[in-house]
Structures are given as structure tokens and as C-alpha cells.
Image (cartoon, rainbow, N blue to C red):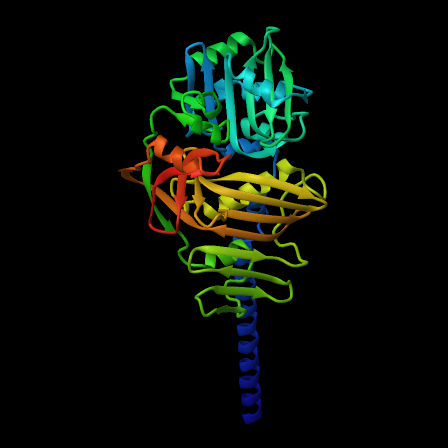
Amino acid sequence: MDQTARRRRRNLIQNIAIALLSVSAVLLFAQLQLYNLGTSEDPLYLERLTGEGSPSRLREFPAPVRVVLTDSYGRYGSLGFTTNSDGFSALGLREALGSVQHLAPSATDAFRGALSGPSIYFDFLNPLPLQVLAELTGAEGTALEGNARCLLLAAGADGSVHLYVWDGADTVLTGTVASTALSIDSLTEAVSQSGMGSVSFAFEVVEMEPLYGKLFPLSILPTELPQLPVLSAASSISGTDWLLAAFGFNINTRERYAEADGTEVITEVEADRSLHIRPSGEITYRSGTDATLEISAQEEVPTAAEAVLGASILLEQLTEDRSGEARLYLESVSQGGDTTQLLFGYQIDGVPIRFSDGGHAAEITLSGTSVTRLTLRFRQYSTAGETSLLLPLRQTLAIAAEHPGTELSVGYADGGGDSVSASWLAD
């Protein structure tokens, strides 16, 4: 009886141990499933993160643009406009980019000359691929190639609307817009309903003040200084586990340590990946051979528009509810071989926010469709209820004239403090 009892107790203990191990395995499996569903194994998460869908979705990511309208009475413009601003769609750029099939070489003088008649001038601050600009404005499937910074819709002597494209350097191109897409009457109507303040270009007021000749000729100079709010600013990282999950790291990893300056480092040696989270709110992600983050593309190497869309969605997910009233915008995209480089900045209501150290809000490198490097500065901006005090234009002009070719514009300069004011920017 004693041996039988001992055997029963031993079997009972073994059964309990097996049951506990089974429960532990189930719990571990469930934990892993929950972790994966919260990060990169969830197909819906990947779709949101990397940009499944048409590049026309770029319309959802507003780009800052300076606009100048010219009619028979003068010039009127806005230094705080975006491709999603009320009234932008009525300016005809989408129709023009979707209509023009061919661009021929032109000249800078022709571009400036076209500004003298009814026209609408668009300055996107930096050169961008025309296909990307078309998608940003809502035009799909443009046949135009090359880069453009400034575009001009102008009434031609032949009764047609002409599109001028300037890349910000030496190349000026022009093409005729189909009248069914945008007629001179439609252009004239759009110009007459601007409601914007009076502005001028630097090149046309040189006779009034020779110092204007020292500036970049297409610097847009407002007659009255714009009233822009002071911004409160702060680094916006609160907790870091969500960042690990966003980049596909296990939040319970043991490969996690802090450096002397407070930077938190998370590594994944087998996959040759790392994430650095600095006290300033800047993060740097590097990936080796394993592609944990990828964007969506039709081919192994994405088009510029596909790369911009994928990067924009990724950054939107990372900064959602963490950038305040500001949003990221594309500053540049360049491609060589299977590598794509993208730079982004912050903007608020179409006014760019620059960092005093000359850096960018975000930088992304793609190898094919894989994100191999990402740097992002988390900054949160909100209006503070005060108005920025800009230096009078004449005083600013005297300073800028010491550096011939300087472009004057209005924007925010973020030096890393908790308050950011609008000021004149010299590029």
C-alpha cells in the first residue's frame, strides 16, 4: 500500500508539473502573439506603417508653399500656405500638372517676364521631383520628369496658359496647359479672388533701393510684416517602450543599456539592428541585413513618390499626437542605384521651422524598400498666444546685403529652447 500511495503521489506531482509547464507555454505563446500583434507582425500595422496604396495618398501630407498672385493691380501673396490650405485647389496647379505632357527649355528672363502679366507663382521652398509635386497637389500620373522648386502659371500671348518650371538652379522649362484643363479665364478668376496681402519680388524693386539687388531675385517681400505667433516647444518623448515596439524590438530585451550622457541604447545583435534614444528627444535607428521595416513599392527599388509616401506614413505614425500643431514635410528626396535619401522638416500652417544647428527634423535612408537608417527629432510645437516681433525689413536688408545672393524669407528658428519665435531667415 505504501508503494502504491507513493506511486500515486509521484504521478500526481508529475501531472501537476506537466500541467504547469503547459500553462506556462500557453501564456508565453499568448504573450508573444500579443507582442507581435502590437508591432511588426500585424499586417494592418505594417500597412499603416509602410504605405500600402497609391502614391496619390501623398495629398494627405501637406507641403508648405509660398504663393504670389499677379493681376493688373499688383502682386498679392501668402508666406503661410500649404497644398491642403483652403483655396489652394482653386489655383489650378493640379490641373496644369495633370495636363502638360511635354516641357521645353526656356530661360530665366522668360520666367521673370511671365510674372509681369496675370499669373500664379508657387515656391515649394526646395527642389522636389515633379512627379512628387504632382502627387502632393492631387494630380495623378503626370508624365513630367525632373526637379522643380518654383512653378508659374501665366497667361500667354497665344491665348493659352503656360506652365513654367524652375529647378532652383539653372534649368527653366515651359509647356502649354490644355485649355480644357485650365483656361485664361479660369486663371484670371483665380487671381482676382486672392484676398492676400501685398508683396513684391526683390528683383523688381531694385530701382527703389539698390540693396535689393544683393538679394536672391525671387525673394518674396511682404509690404506689411506678417503677424506670426510665438511657439512653445518641447521634446516630446514620454516613455520608450512604445518606440521599441514600433521598430520591432522586444520591450523586454536584455540588450538594453544607458550610456554616460543618458542615451538609451537598444541592440539586436543577431539582426545587426540598434536604436539610440537621446535625452534631447532625438532617436537614431539602424538596421543591418534583416529588413524589419519596409515600405510598399511595385518593384524592388521604389519610385520617388513611393519612397516619399512610405517614409511619410512611417513618420506620421511615429509623431502622431507628439508634434503638437506642427507637421512634418518633405524637404528633399534623392536616389542613386538602389539607395534613396529623404529629408524632412517641421512646418506649422505652412511656415517652416528650421533648426539653428542646420539639421533636419528627420532623415531616412532606404536600401531598396528597406529602412536602413532613420533619424528623428521629436519636438512638440503649439502657439503660445504671443506675437513674434520681426526685425523691420530695411534693417534686415542691410544685414543680408553683406552676403550677396541671400534669399530672405520668414520662418521659425528653433535653437532647442522652450520658446520659438518667427524671424527673417537668410539662405
